[in-house]
Amino acid sequence: MHRQNKVIWSFFIAIGFLLLSYCMSNLDFPISGEKALLYRFELVRNYFFPRHETVNDSILLVDISFDKITVSALDEYNMPIGDIQITDRKKLLELLQVLKKRDDYKYILLDVFFGETGTTAHDSALYATICSMQRIVIPCHSDERLANKSLSEKAGVADYTTTYKEGGFVKYPYMPNSKKSLPLKMYEEMTGMRIKKHWFFYTEGWNLIRKSVVLAFYVNAERPYSEEGEKVWYHLGADLLGDENNIGLLYDATELTKDKYIVIGAFQGDDSHSTYIGAVSGTLINLNAYFSLLHHHHFVSMPLVLIMFFAFFILAYLTLTRQDLRRLADVATRNHSYRWRTRLMALSAMCSWVGYSLFLTILCLFTYVFLGEVYEIFITATMFYLLALAVKYTDNLKKLSKIWKKEGY
Image (tube, rainbow, N blue to C red; front, side, top):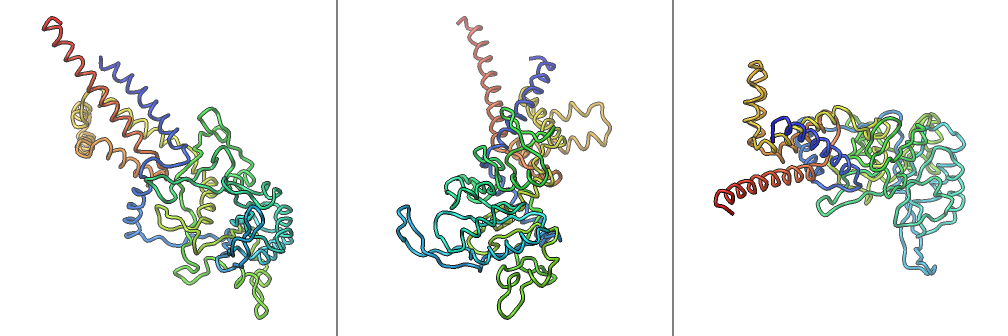
């Protein structure tokens, strides 16, 4: 194959691998070990640059971890099967009634699942209040039904998928099974934008997007108080509603909810998920998924496309020309300055040492640090391995063919 043909084939292989990488990034579940990779990287970075609580003034976090009541659970035949703990519906109703009357909030993310198991005397009033409110979203799940069908209009799917390799949270699917997720429903209501599907492409306006992303954690609230002693989240009963001896902040500080994202959920307890930055509550995962949309983290950026295309083109060309990166640098630097020769030779030496798979891993970390974007490594590395095998077997067949001709077969 002539050099010009190899360049052309490398171009088309790079395009094909880009499309493959895009399709893999849209899967609702992870294939590679990106979480483990990013987790180790964040451990090192956190050692030198410790993370701090990052909750801006536009967010009001309401913790309901300790606002529980015990109710009797029923089976499908309405027979009692034991006692369970659920969020205190009376307190939730009181909170939402105040918020509805004021109507000064920006949006309410009510991360409480209202399933069919366990009922209270306040359910009907609570469900009616939720359905009558504007700018509010609640979670639903693919494998469980809501207690009342009317709630579905306010609900978005809050599910994620694990694999044998990744047991915790890795990627957030914005359209699981073609349904709107909780953050996506919230995003579309706030911005008026819509995500559309075109075969295996997804767009928002004129922008190419991913429907499943490794989140950027814009909001970090691991503890109720910051290092400076400031309140990070408020308890529903003890802080906001108060009791017979104290007036709650909800009534005392009337500006507390004005123009705020009010996020209600359990920030402590069982609703905690393992992520690449550590344990994060499901409520904060949903909130960060929304802010990732708001910051256009789901957009496929042109710098990422160009970087990946260039990397894939080089790897494809090396494979087709049966070269390593060191030899490529010798050819590429003949007509360049000493500074560029030094840089390319250093790059080629590193890549010849680490191999293609680790090179793609380093590239993944580079795009994560500088662009905040992560792509699937395993499939891409596997495809380059298969390409190298195909080239190798083609060469072997050509050698055998020459031997057979020489010997008269």
